[in-house]
Length: 175
View 1 (spheres, one colour):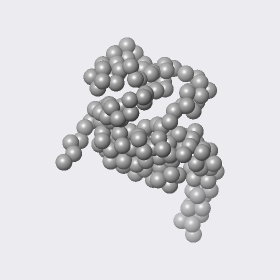
View 2 (cartoon, helix red, strand yellow; view 1 turned 90 degrees about the vertical axis):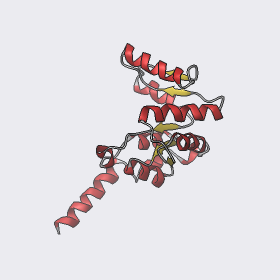
View 3 (cartoon, rainbow, N blue to C red; view 1 turned 135 degrees about the horizontal axis):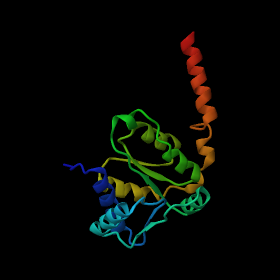
View 4 (tube, rainbow, N blue to C red; view 1 turned 180 degrees about the vertical axis):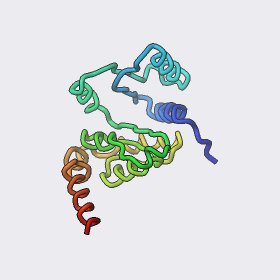
């Protein structure tokens, strides 16, 4: 039996498990925590889950700086809550990670995100449990980065492809 955790506990539990099994791993958070209370909360969560000292928050970065930092990452994680909006939308992060050549771990709670990862072979889709996410991180690190990149996204989710498919669908329905 699996106990469902809220997304915050799930995230920190998964990272903590992964770190226990991978003692040299660390986490890079690209971006900033907007205010003092967010920074305090994040820091206390890291401490609670025993991962403080293995997490680096970059703070605000320009797009160029952020891309340089991301280029050195071995794996990305994109955990999204299971809600109706995400069940009917197309998250862009997994496509962006694939274009950057970074394997990604996602949970099976967002259908289009899972579809993209499977179709592009750009990461690992796992169940929404800490154990599965931690295992998925270990598996995704093994994905060959040279099999990913902009080429994999072109022809799948680039705007030319999407607009062409949409145009064809509209024409077919108008007949």
